[in-house]
Image (cartoon, rainbow, N blue to C red; front, side, top):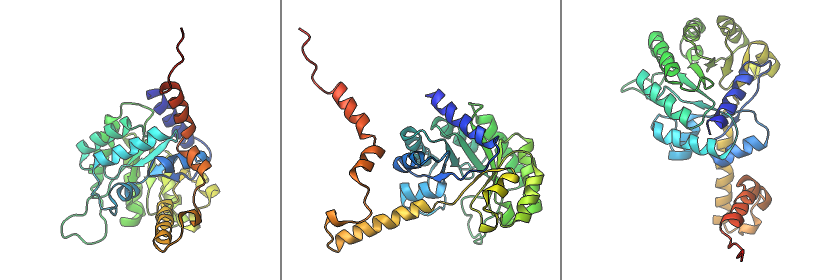
Amino acid sequence: MSGRWTQRRQAVRTILNGNECINPGSVFDPISGRIAQELGYEVGIIGGSTISLAVLGAPDLIVLTLTEFADQVKRISRACDLPLLVDADHGYGNALNVMRTVDELEMAGVAALSIEDTILPKQFDADSKAKLIDREEGVGKMRAAIAARRDADLVICGRTSAPALTSVDDACARIRAYESVGVDAIFLVGVKTREQLDQLAEAVSIPLILGSTPPEIADLSYLTSRNVRISLQGHRPFAAGVQALYEALSALKSGTAPADLQNVAPPEMMDRLTRKSEYMAALQKFLSRLDDPS
């Protein structure tokens, strides 16, 4: 099994060390992971927000526990061969919690994970705007994440929302500090303009990963020139799935016959995505009565 994880981790490192920027596929359960793999995505992105929705039906307010998160990640990594980049939020606590988070997610088979420097969960009597921990504490979390890593191929990304929450200058200082302690990539959230990205890209030499980007900077050729190697497109596939399920259940409730539902995955697709042929072969091999050799 460790070799299986190593191949995926090395695949992400190849992307980060390569010469082009890619878009990952947003996945949140085993079937979505298999779909993204079948469609040719090179990396799957797992957001804390979508796992909170899938597991708890709750918004992204850090009410999901590390155990629940790691369990769902493990289900996805076991079901497909897609390298997984995981948003591990703030590491579920302080630097010691970060170490536990890295250990659990590494064992769950992730190829890469990011640790961010946001104050999470929301504090008592705080205003609605998110805030960042001190830069020194952020450095401590990154150092802890690297120390907890057992497989050297596991990619550790230092993540910050400083471009949106403080300033680009502060973001540059933070990412330089995170690079200096050995993170493999920088994950930036909240970059709005090319001017901001130009300045941030000049601040570090390691690869960049971007959260959802506005149209002005979404061009992959431009992102490639700024050392961005992975650029997220958000997690709208989950919302698309919710809409499709809502419409199907609504149609049935309104009297539509099951056979008349629209946009339903055909049996061949369901069999393929659930790997039915593999299970049927195993049934035949292990649950059929063998002929009496005598």
